[in-house]
Image 1 (cartoon, one colour):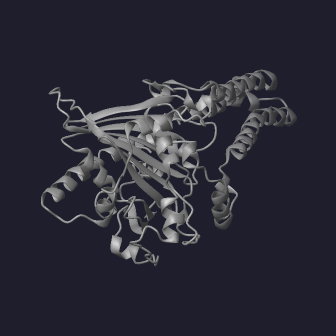
Image 2 (image 1 turned 30 degrees about the horizontal axis):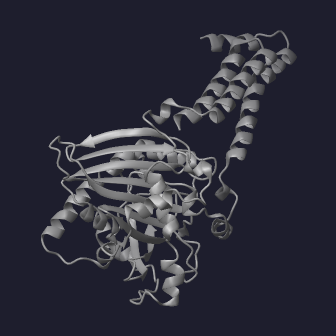
Image 3 (image 1 turned 60 degrees about the vertical axis):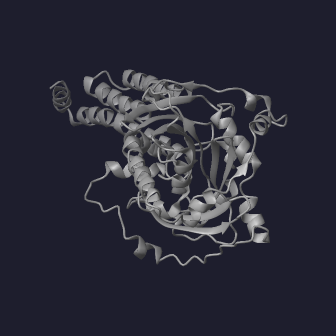
Length: 440
């Protein structure tokens, strides 16, 4: 009623000039809010908003970050892209599943599987793609000694046979990084290792994987180059991944590295859009059951994931927060189905066979990598894992813009008009704008 009364007061001015003047003052804050929104949106716009498909592809190949720059998705152990969680919030009438045979037939990628690891192409594009430097980086991540920002906990959930914790951190540059710890009851480390490596079985539980092909494999080190195409929601084109991967074994622990790599033998195309900055690696090891019997009958998986799919990172973070648990819950049924299939005596796929070819390293060697003298002192410092929810902590970099917005709204409201309506509009716009980052 107060706003309506203020509007009527403007219309009751004695002259048309006074009415027009008051209306101009009334409308001015709205235009100012629009201009501010345009300026802020322009300054925050993603790079892909102004680049064509070809420019984006070339730009991504020039500026892609190495695996040592950051780490984690989230919940899917390198199998569920961050944006895939957004589909959980969209109408259920949209058909997300497709017939794999029909989709795969549209990709005519030649298979170049080599059985000789010494071939020049394998050495250049497979064996060299994932090296001991990647093992060192993953080991530092597992031991929380990579020198990055502190991890902020965002989830702690469990089922009778699985427990799950997830953390996130925002580096100064690059996409958000995720860390998770999952404990599977009644599962061996070897079974879980094969499960995540087996692309042929993955299509049965990962409904977004529509194409998986092995391009290169090395029977000596087990290193592989694989080609993935993943189905994305209707408002995004499909994404293509060229992934180099390899497994190291230290004691009873398995260090599994997968990351995006350049692959000149397969030129990029407009569709599907290739994702260059991709890192999804995990440490798999036996763990004590949480049932309290003191037995090592469980398997612990510590995962690190990040990728830049060409969508706004804040939008991706929103999708992760809303859909992470729904995506994680799908993994355990897939693992149990895999256990059942393996117990029936079914033959192993080529990917599962490669998962059993590991480069063995000693614990002392890992410790040597972690304390490498070539690493900077800052990188050797331990970072923290904070047991707090991400929504309860805001960085100073986010608080300062909010203070500027609210402070500017106060000055604007006090200087333009003393009427209640104008102040209400200004403060309403400012509050919504300032709270936008908090919701994300």
